[in-house]
Amino acid sequence: RINLRAVQFDREVYNFFSRILGNLIAVTNIRMDVHCENVRTLNVNVGIMGHVDCGKTSLARAISTHFSTASLDKHPQSIERGITIDLGFSSFMAPVEGSLFTLPYDQIQFTIVDCPGHASLIRTVLGGAHIIDIMLLVIDVNKGIQTQTAECLVVGELTANNLIVVLNKIDVIPSKLREVVVSNMQKRLSKAIKTTRFGDCKMVPVAACPGGADKMDVYGSPLGIDILVANLMALVSSAQKRLQGGDFLLAADHCFPVKGHGTVLTGTVLKGQCRVGDIVELPHLKLQKKVRSLQVFKRPVQTCAVGDRVGMCITQFDSKLFERGIVAAPGTVPSFIAAVVSAEKIRFFKGIVHSKMRYHVTVGYTTVMATAVFFKAPGHPASLATSAKSCEEGILFGSQDDSPLQADCTNDVDISLNRESNISAFNEDLEYEYSSCLDSVPGDNSCTAGVEHFCELRVEDKRCHRVITSTCSTWALLRFDRPVTCPAGSKYVASRFDADIHKNSCRLAFHGRIIHPSVEDPASVKHIKVFTMKKRFGSVDRVHDVKTVIGKGMFKKETDMTIFQGLRVFTSRGEIGTIAGAFGKSGKFKVCLKDGVSPSDLKGNASRLILNYKHFLFGKEAGKQMKQ
Image (cartoon, rainbow, N blue to C red; front, top):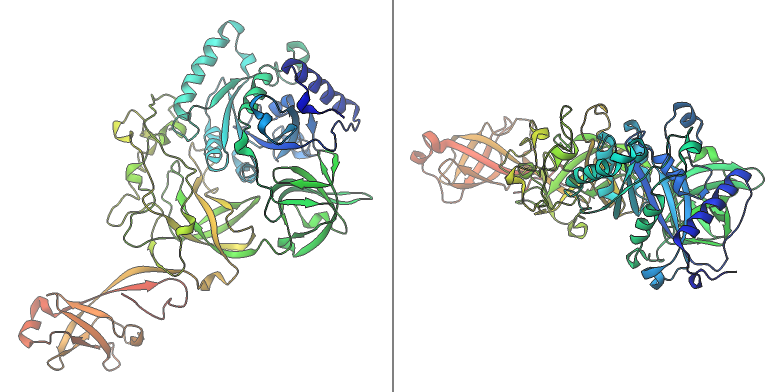
């Protein structure tokens, strides 16, 4: 047994022997356990994202030494199509060194999550993004930012804590021009990255697979991998020390049978810990199973904790019933068909985010169609006005004819997609005003402002040099087509995947967190009070007495007048009255005027009656009671 804390590794020697050992395991298929039982390991999940065919899987192969059963495009369709179609998992170890000695760990395990790059597989990317700590955005140095590059950057802003840009395929550039070309690309990319919350992130040039897979023997080993590993180590700090408390929660991404042992679920621990022998639940199936064994990259362990990539073996379970989903402590994760969520528009989305429209909502590994209804505190503007749209939209998602990196850029814009909405501010006892679109402002037509000329926005527009902040919180009621299983507080992303994938535009519309899941029928959600302001007009038919007039034209004869009884009405001259009830069965009604009535005052314009009231959309008040 070796105490890794007491050993000072030389970086080149360590990397050399790590790769030799990893290649030996891969070639000979020998199961070698080089870990000590008492070695404390910090797991850091690193997601590799980028446009299709930028070299993501090659980078995962170059940097990893341990490979899971779901890695390096082993899926038959991946081999047939020549692209990554599912999440792949691999890992490598690094010693705790330098400033990291203060961490209570002996070694660091980087788990590599290789995500697909094709536009049609963005659901899979979103599913993998919620488990990562650090994002590697892979960019072909010869092409720069492409459509999926920008979309992955948006996903990173929503989910990842840190970002490293990897400029791949530098081997294609002639050695004499390489330094100049890479430097120019870094300058161009920095202009786009500075408009995001990642600011001055590191950019590392690499050649993950020099000469291509068929010519690695000629061109040699990968370039720049050691520098990339050093930059990953620099992002591992005491801030990533995870809390071990809470109920166990595992995001399982693969399920397969092992003859003679049982069914294995592989995934990432999001919360809490689990031991061999514990009882776990598959919430969406309403099944509870006993944990027979646990493995971390083929190494048997007795316990797993938050952040770990783990394989969990359970017995007497048909693997065909489970593809991806949640494994949790019994009774801790609900299934629901409606939920109140915090909502914030993603600024790169070109269209209007309308209420009562259907969106693809991704929560964890699940994507479900849902109808959204937006609402906010009455009297406040929406959480973001498109009239103050920031200029970085045109940088990442430019027009088809323009390079997305053509424009100059300054660092005067400070807008973060990852701002957390004030979830605790939502109060189900309060009344909220319905919003026709997510970014609407009462009395302002900002919902459509700038949409037609979205792609022409550029950062040299001095009007864009401002800090845009959220002035209030906006919420939404999501009604799902089928039950969703996730804990309260989970992040979600709502998208329009029905949009044309060949257009250079962002399909991610808005995001937030699940606040109040509801297991009730979504057509009768009782715990929220959302209203729209309604206005009705009528006229005075005749004077009934000195304080009462008879009104007409405001209601139909079949209208239930009892729900309007007691509401205030105004005459066109500003006189105040109260609806006293129905008069006959033709839709006429009585109005008692506060200061009395004079027949001469009710001629001409004064004969008009106006009623303003709140119409509730959900809950017990919907359609049964009107308020003012």
